[in-house]
Amino acid sequence: MNRLRSFGLSLAAPLLAIAFSLVVTSIVIEISGGSASDFLAIIFSWPVDRLLVNIVNQTSLIYLSALAAAVGFRMNLFNIGVEGQYRMAAYAAAVFAGAAILPGALNVLGALIVAMAAGAAWAGIAGLLRVYRGVSEVISTIMLNAIAITLTGYMLNTYGTQVGDSRRTTEIPASSQVPGWQPFEQSAGQVWTVGLLAVIAGVTFWLVLNRTRFGFDLRATGQSPTAAIASGVNNRRMTLLAMLISGAIAGLVWMPSLFGSSHYYGSTFQTGLGFTGIAVALLGRNKALPIAFAALLFAYLNEQSNRLTIEAGISVEVIQITQGVIVLAVVIAYELVRRYRLRAEERRVAQSSGPSSPSVEEVAV
Image (tube, helix red, strand yellow):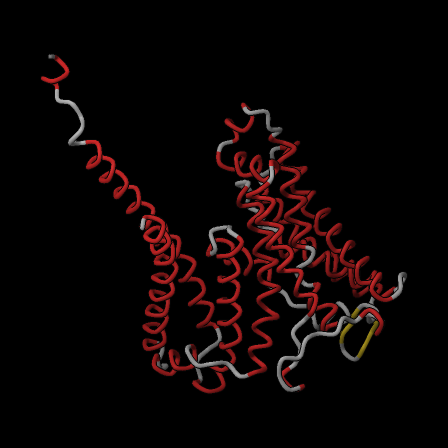
């Protein structure tokens, strides 16, 4: 019964946050002259086949981004640089895969390794600055984001191929383009096969954090660095490893899209996934399964946003308001649930120990 109650309280926090965000967004829409009823009708309507495919594909990208941020958060590190890390990794992987140094599947595997290495290296810069110079990873990763945008843009303009009005890397050869799964008719598109990386990463994340000594040391260092040091954990080593692992996961963020549909780095590159991942990681409390549901929710809202403009004349930015309010509300909701649990535990302990506690007179006798 206690476990069931605890599960109910854990589920209540995000549900209350989502309900609250919908109410706030509806009020904003009404004030701005829109129709809240149209907004709710579209949000809760079943997506068409094409949107369902897009939701699944986008969920894989957002989930990988959120896992990258969650590794840092569990270590009490704020890796704000996922955006720059996956951008650098996507460019490096696209160049490698486009060069076709290896044949077929080996080219795909090699590009994935290159992506993880590039993401880890870019995150490692912030890790080294934190460990050896005491520079806050928040500041360094934000600056590295800006550098990554400038550097990839320069590399693309200098060494990229001009196609129409834009420049791009060499297209991945057909032998290295990974076919997807087509659950509906051809016009609905395909579910990216490389999106399975999100499942593999999620399972690995859970196993390492909850079933290995390394995961225990990482969580212990994040919760109490002093206690971790006292138990023999090398704080500097754990900080650097956490940033490297976070960057390596970030390097995989755009890989499903690269091999599934884009096939080159250029105008098809999707930006903003790094910042979305941070919000999703916070919403999922940095845990593998809750993050998956949060990623699905954000992907669903993003895909439904296009219908808001077409069918109801509501600005796409309304979805951003909804997502922002969800994150803020869920933080407050979890804090309220935590306080409720604490008070309930205090009452339970007081009730169970009260009648059996000896009085002052009994002790004296």
